[in-house]
Length: 196
Image (tube, rainbow, N blue to C red):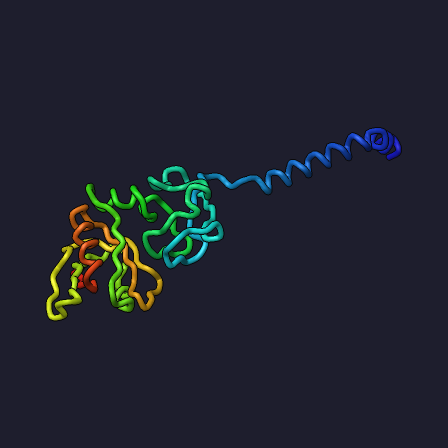
């Protein structure tokens, strides 16, 4: 027994160093990043509007499960505007944000047009993707209402309205945007919703 303990005593420091190195290696393996590609997802249910840093979390996916247009850096998404409500855990891609990616997904030649409709409560009934006609009731001719823009898609709507109405963003052609701008200056706007 003494013959066995003498070599162990002589190499005690070396054995302690090896054990310490092994425990550090195990700790590093335990905290290393999980496999997969890092992409951004909603950290909580989001009603729409501007994205802030706490709204976003990083998730990891297998490379073949990462959708086109996914983001992997918070700086590229913070401050941008969502096209509509997003559920917790939903991946954030370019088509979920206002801008070129979203409008190009709807069709070529479209622009994002902000439109204030008179009835804020009516706006809360709408969802992104709804197709609406925009009607104008002219102030000087209360009995007359005309259709200003037909079959335009709702891009986003506010979570709440105000006494001045509600601001919608619609995907329109340039010509429809001009007609809507003219109508807003002299009439009250409302919408009718197309059946899906």
